[in-house]
Amino acid sequence: NTSEPPVAVESLDDVPEHVLRGLPEDVRLFPSAVDKTRLGVWATKSILKGKKFGPFVGDKKKRSQV
Image (cartoon, rainbow, N blue to C red; front, side, top):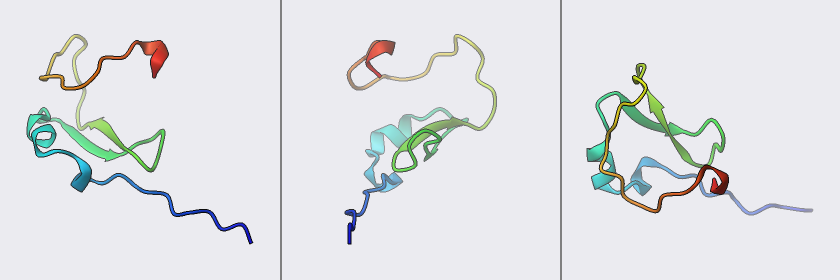
């Protein structure tokens, strides 16, 4: 019997309050399309190219690092 340990699923309870407060009006956190155990950032309507929002908190990564 090869029972695998349960996989932890990220939830909104895991997201710091300042992150939730800083989300733009048309952006929501829902389960990721890439990894169902993580949250992803989803737009509820189109975001114009070049639109900026923030502030960014964390470590910036190069595209090759993600």
